[in-house]
Length: 227
Length: 327
Image (cartoon, rainbow over all chains, first blue to last red; front, side):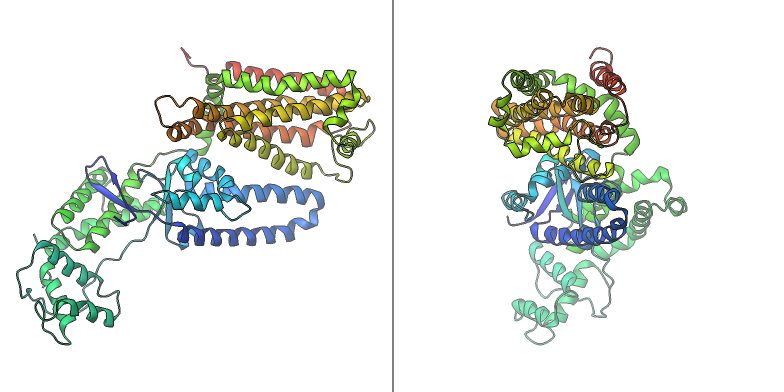
């Protein structure tokens, strides 16, 4: 199935779902982090330029630390997310869902040097991500980590005052789930799209008129037990 | 039970747990203490939430509720099952225990790596004494003269390129160079170990021919005191990085009961302490090289004595430290 959800089994007996992130959001996160690096290095260059060779040595050490230590620090001490990743709502975790430790973080960042090749275009890393089920780059494979989405949907607050009405037909389980999902999503999609979707069942489940969407929402509320 | 009833019954409990998690993640320990959730109840609350997640799936409640509970359980899972490591304690344990034991466990690879490195090194030092022109079949004259200028007997800072006068700049350069070489030695082990063998032989040859040449033309009095200090750390680090590369290569030749990829992954994990320790040794070598070895004000005898102690220290570290009963 074309899905990026991965299951992890927990000791409590429930399966938790992780959604792995592909190359595009990760590349965006990396661009943001690189911009931050560039900013820091430019400011550092201005300051350290005054100190001649001592400053140059310090600059090299700073560059070394940034390219490597920056990622390790944020992954271990800030819940697996550098500022760039946090902006893209991503997080680095171990395969089993636990937060990354020192070893894993250092391995994956050490191998970043290999993933960067050729040049700085992440050619190897990108190829590895595209060939791997979990979008792991070489560093991830060696460290046993994955990058997952960490977005949390808000609790659904009931805003509409549409009355809860039972569906016109007796529905099987899949149909009930579909209507419930519609009721959940209808706030996030445009009105035209909501009408378009409701039009699929208009004529037999709901009336074939402009209020099809509202009727479906009412059905969803009833199925969820909301009064 | 309908979804609405389910939600209204348990929502408070979920929100309290979520607030508690937020406080923990943001390190607001004091706020967490004021939470309505007592520490003794945390595990039970987490198990309840897992149970609610299972129920919401089994009863086919709305996807948003399932997703919400999934995220809540995931965060709880992450918090409850994370390893509580402290950097100081973990790095202390690494250097006192993990690293020396790793080198001892892979002593055969270390021995092979040492032979591949030191054999050409010593052979060429000796050979160049009897056949001085051998240098120019391995180095080009420009490179040879550059090295000669770095180790002239009356140079102010030994080992520096003419023009750069700063200890700290050289430190930065050494750190970058040495660690890159060490890393390349290790990473090229992925090519069935052939890369590592080549890098070790090459570096041994290169260093040997330079050492031999400089001794032969009489610059030994500046060269040997210079390298003696950091040599103990740097040469050992090169051979350890080589050993790590050979571990990788060997895992591909003889994967045992695993597939080759699984064997490589396993070997990478095993070899990781070696490469991390080697990187630390390179760092120490860079410190010694930049701030101690290059100084022309310290006499050769002092440098040799210190070097002797450093070699003893390195040998003792790997032979003695971290041994537990029975290992």
